[in-house]
Image 1 (cartoon, rainbow, N blue to C red):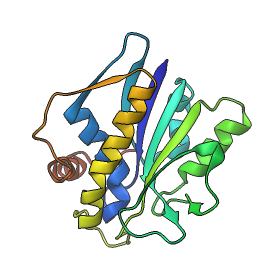
Image 2 (image 1 turned 60 degrees about the horizontal axis):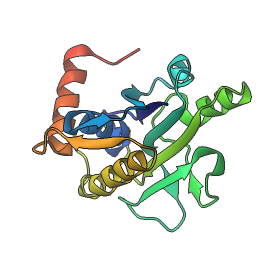
Image 3 (image 1 turned 60 degrees about the vertical axis):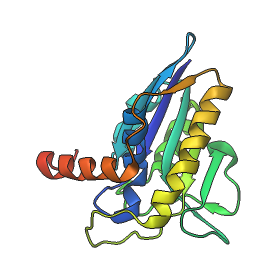
Image 4 (image 1 turned 180 degrees about the vertical axis):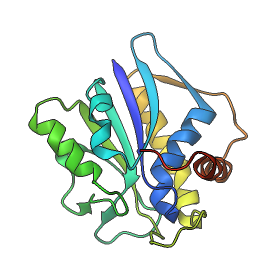
Length: 187
């Protein structure tokens, strides 16, 4: 089985970038091992529709993004099957030009959508003002997000070995910001 962990978000808009930061964090901290499966990690940024050719190559996808939910607070983490999104969750994104939800709907209409789960976190700060800081609530949520992914992968036969225990989301986000400033936005 080919598995994709896909981070979505705009790192220039505070907590909105957690999906992109989080996949870099996983990539830096872990190696994923399986005799039957491969795991690919992709920072999808805000590419949405441009990700369609990539997404359809996989059997299983985990999308990491911001969500909103009734009676939630910043840092709450949700993991759900895209096709069975709970009614109390609103996964419309925030600063994406074309939302990931609509992209997955388009793939699904063509019957090309792999099994897709969403790892969503409630952001504290998402604004039009460019800032390079993640909120304390998002930083704290990363431990739970990490456990969810590692446990899910284990259930489907993928072992997660820590190769860099020293990394943390703050270090990763600093590197992401520097990379964005040096290279400019992805198109």
